[in-house]
Length: 199
Ligand SMILES: [Ca+2]
Image 1 (cartoon, protein in one colour):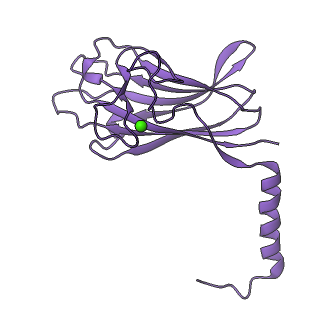
Image 2 (cartoon, rainbow, N blue to C red; image 1 turned 135 degrees about the vertical axis):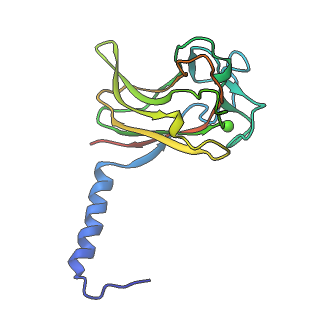
């Protein structure tokens, strides 16, 4: 371990004080999401409890492999999609306060796409809040599926933002290829929410 004998004591104390001050203002916590690993089925097997799903072929799957953890994942059957319409899934999060710093992430795996077929277009992670009764986008991060290395490696993708009100909705939006030669599934598992409490 490298030591820094020339470093003045005030520096060390100052750093410690800064950390304490940060701790007093904001505390990073892993917020509990409902069913983050998609293990629990909802009203039917392919619908994960705690999440709202819209669009086609975004489902809780227990027979797809590899699964990152547990015995279920969220699968996007891109090859089954017949219309150029996005699919999505969202969860309303409890316990968020205005000013909280949010990091929402999830692991994704893209199947290899045959050269004569088209992979899905994009995955977008979105933070939404309710303002004056309307859903507004707080932050979003879009990932091109073509940029995700295909194969058996899980990639963690994330979006960051600050909650403008006490409400927070996390959303994953998947857009299929515009052409009809769609192929290659997407897998999602282990959603995660980190919250740094504001003042
Ligand atoms: Ca899982």
